[in-house]
Image (cartoon, rainbow, N blue to C red; front, side, top):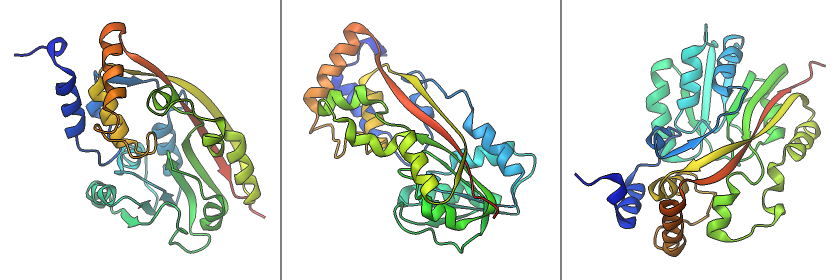
Length: 262
């Protein structure tokens, strides 16, 4: 049997290119890449919020994995829970996962108005939305209701992005800066109760993990294909083989936002 250390660049790339990318299950990366987790434990905290809610909406739910986990940990579930997702393979995956819990998954583009009436939910949640539509979040929340979410911050994993794309100007991710997002929430009439940010260590242990990551998180290197970026992949493979894991840093922030009662 060929050992890991004798596998070629082509072996690793072929493996990373073959893994299905639907959903937000990252278990395939076990032993191949690591990411430190934020101290606040989003999914467990979400379980506590769900237990106190009567009507909940999870936006951009991915494959439904985080919502499913949180509901499994909640001491009781909301009377009504709905999720939205824009990418068809994830809609199918989330529907299969969440339907047994009685949760409807609504296919809705990320940038479209939310297909719900005003004041429907007392909890809106999201883990890593592409962007937060603050006006729509405010509209569907009941007075006194909360938006509880973990966002991807600015320049997340940019050491890897810049390996492939070269130096990127700060402006490319300014809309993800927590201060700018706070301003957006407040402009929509929402009150930011808590906002925390952390920078976390990420390690890629082989080039297969890099290939799979860039295929899965498609906005990191737009239009990424193995063929288009073969030279950068090969250089990174040789660097990892000689120096050890490639280190980058993710940025995350936790939003706890409330719609005023009055």
